[in-house]
Image (cartoon, rainbow, N blue to C red; front, side, top):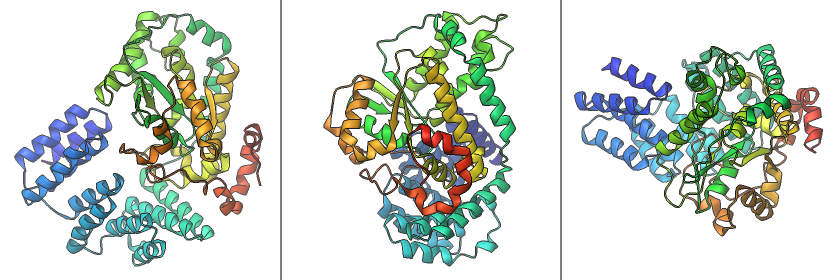
Length: 471
């Protein structure tokens, strides 16, 4: 059985959902009394937004007596993420009945208490855990991130920052996460040099096909935790739009597909101007088709859909490629005060990637590189709409009208009620964007005044460029 579990997990990592689903089903069929198959298939469905099927797997596990602490923990986590807090607590109690001392369960119960705004209760749950006795660095990091979130809500900011700092160190330990500033800097310099105004003009002469019978992608880019989820929820509340979340398809093209399609031996982006394997309209269309067919396979659109949003933040690095493949697509960059962006990213327990968050200073360095890259793209003539998060939360209607006009959709009052949408956000911002727009986080960085002081030399020019201040 465990060979099939390993295969299913590998298929998931390699983004082979069909194969992964088949493996999990095989495990359930041949080992119906084992919880692993039900957990795996339920998580697979949950990650795909297939929530009714997710629920059915957990119920099937109970029916076959395949329940254990891990299953109830996964089930309760799922209910919390789709905002069924009472149901999450009910399931969590079943896990408590099996093993009340499990640290992962304390983290979940504390999160539920915090989401019910019982911050003191959440802290009490966490303080009952002996942090030093947690052997798993994964669980230790999750515990410390949740402790930071709770202390932040209680206004105990120095203690909160210390918890976040320790959480990131634990995460660095268990995934071997190391940020290499020279490597990051060199990559951005090379891309800036390659995507010169002249090279972009050369590439733009290759004709692109406009598939008017398919929904037009809208690309929302920006630094992680800068408001991309909120912006997508607002656009996605429109009856003619569908929010597709953080799609990896542009990354697939830059990482592997472009090389496969062009036949070039050069890496991206150099392969776009490889004289030995010239890029032409057919190859460009093949890249475009890979993206569009991948979106279609998600099965999130219908005949009424005119726009589908992709809010992968780091698509900001690929704005030139996006404008080449999808000249009809609106691109929106949402920015936030650089201090807030860096703090929010550093305080987030991202599932994978994001090596730059290994320290707050490295987070700021990466932020600076991303913003410089976007400024370079703008200087080459690539057009995209610039939105400040602060404008969106303080003047939602006027800012939303500007956004809808830019993406080519009429006004709809539903965009002002995005928090009532039944569409579930799957990223680290899922707790915030299901609430009404709030302004309490606009100057959050002032709560961490001492912590952001080392960032001033790194970010001062970017802060001024965006019209912010360091105080």
